[in-house]
Image 1 (cartoon, helix red, strand yellow):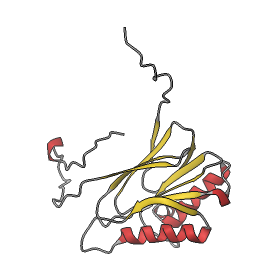
Image 2 (cartoon, rainbow, N blue to C red):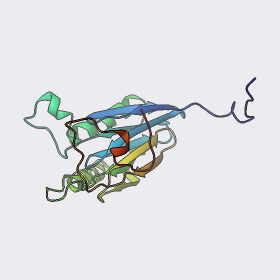
Image 3 (cartoon, rainbow, N blue to C red):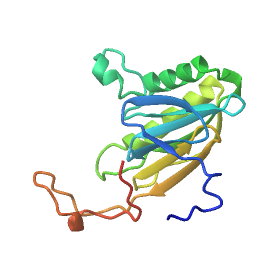
Image 4 (cartoon, rainbow, N blue to C red):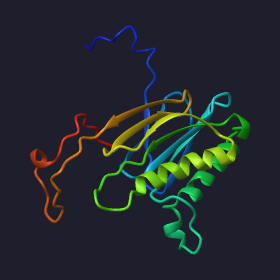
Length: 188
């Protein structure tokens, strides 16, 4: 016979949804946790606290996708910010009540253009132009991040990944012991 904790009936099961690059998701419900992994990419976590609805996007490049193919458009911040906001409004959010947290934008590769900084600057400028309150987040640095966001409450958690100076060769499978560790391990 299995013993049941007295608080077990009070705990709500979590529903984890992973947001991949080029995606924007809108959800509601206290059990929902949106997650993503970021390097130079940026994720905007936006919600209407009174409507209890929120969402997350994950973009690779700042700006718009003018002249780009439909498949490539999904990488651009302007497209994904608009997609997220329109999705929120369709689910009952009100534009004047939106609040946002911005994450990511790391400089993960030395010697190349700092696309991470450009992504973060774009996201912050977009919020300002649209009149959306920026209430938190974390951008920049040189480490990737794993983000967890609870859209109903607005709670967010960031777990920094350990930076490695050793390139990982991907032409052959690596044993688990050879992969760089960032501390926490989570399988999706």
